[in-house]
Image (cartoon, rainbow over all chains, first blue to last red; front, top):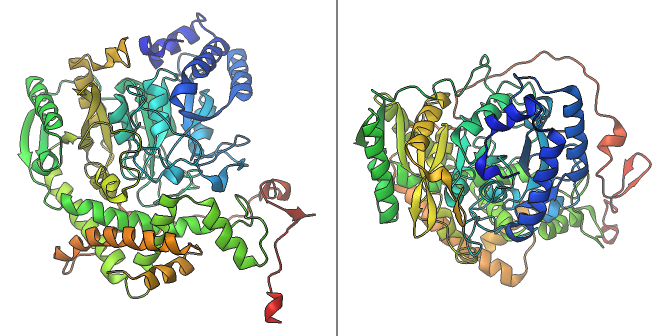
Amino acid sequence: MDYFKTDIEKLHHQLANGELTSVDLVQSTLEGISQIDPEVQAFVTVNTAAALKQAEAVDQAGIATDQPLAGVPVAIKDNIVTKGLKTTASSKMLANFVPIYDATVVEKLTAAGAINVGKTNLDEFAMGSSTENSAIQVTKNAWDHTKVPGGSSGGSAASVASGQVVVALGTDTGGSIRQPAAFNGVVGFKPTYGRVSRWGLIAFGSSLDAIGTLTRRVRDSVPVMNTIIGHDDKDSTTVDRSAEDLGAKIGQDLTGMKIALPKEYLGDGVDAAIVAQVQAAAKQFEAMGATVEEVSLPHTKYAVPAYYIIASSEASSNLQRFDGIRYGFRAQDVKTLDDVYVRSRSEGFGAEVKRRIMLGTFSLSAGFYDAYFKKAGQVRTLITRDFEQVFENYDLIIGPTTPTPAFKIGDKVTDPLTMYMNDILTIPVNLAGLPAMSVPAGFVDGMPVGLQLIAKHFDEATLYQAGAAFEDANNYVDQIPGGQA
Amino acid sequence: MISKADVAHVAELARLEFSDAELDQFTAQLDEILNMVDQLESVDTTDVPVTTQSVHLENIMRQDVASTPTPLNELMANVPTSKGNLIQVPAIIDKEED
């Protein structure tokens, strides 16, 4: 299957009217993976046998016109648990972990007839911005195999960008969907915090984590998000809202839409060529009838320090469960129970995970809590208020997704602080729990860059409306690694 | 400035162990990260509440109803070593302290 030339809607029509069977589609997807992935290394596990069996069942049951995902292959980030299918979080700690239940999002996708063709690589426990922190393999950027795919959903982004699948699930705690989407020239969608159940997502920063999609086209994200949203008794932070079509406003005229462009997102440290692409995008929105005005989000520069305290504190708590007792890696030749904990954790976790556990434990420890964890939580409030003030007068915020295009593999991995600064434009959104999207916005030095769109809580419909209009006004979707679609 | 002794103490709290060389490296890296974090000191947060949850939910209640638990054999499926239905671990009491 040439995923560069099709989309979910076309596939659905072919499946529903019998031009294509799900078994054929899954088989050709698996062939594509076997040809492309040895080089790209996006997949940690390919779900060959189960995917074909599931496709057979879908074909047998028949595909109705109101089942947009039935028979469609999807890839799933490997920090989302899948019953009976190894789920590693790209960590030695979970290298042999086979979950006994499905995450709610997987359950919902399966019920909708989507076929899980495999699990994608990530920075260990989703901690990183390049997927180099994976304990399993190094994923390559689909456009340049000497460059990083971004992270932490680097495997999901590269799998879509290299044409192996039409959609992959990712997770976004500080930009982990949007940043790799930008680096790989695909669309990354992060919903409002609480839209999608986190049940079965291996927890990193529980007040920040969100599950979303990576797709080549804005419209391909919609049926997947519509399927996975909704209240879940197993995740009390999911918000109870009646069924909505998040894509309902796609195609509506942008006339009168009020767009804000924060000056802090175009400041120091952001590549001048990326700033120029964003300014060009602003002009395009104006040409479509929207107004674009410069605004200020004055606390933006404090987002990275606040985030690293909050996310690391939550991670240090969440990762306490990995103790070598009930599941996961257990160190050998240990003599006491305390040794099991200490040695299993020390040998099972990689350097970045340990760094964050240490930073989090420090921030929560006696004597430092007020100066670090509490202070970061207060600054988080100020960052949220900045957004609230802008959204009193505007419908949408735009800016770059990343300060630079993708960098070389090996360039930043030894320098944690430089790596952290890479997330400066995506982190504020997670702190405020807002929905956001990265859409392809052109190229800088031959590498794709992303335009970030940010909307009010639960206003995903406006993101899709503006994102689809921007995609339609450009031809970036026709440009693929190595040429034209 | 975070000291090597502070880092060693935090490692103990986090149930992690490091070689001496690793402790030096982590001390330097954490110090650099904390220097970056110290920018937060310059923000006036007088009377600003702490945000821990971004979509303003509180006190989510549910009925306390019994449900069928996960079968034991499934729960034991990922246990590294077991004996019967029990999880096997090394001796809990350090014999040298007897």
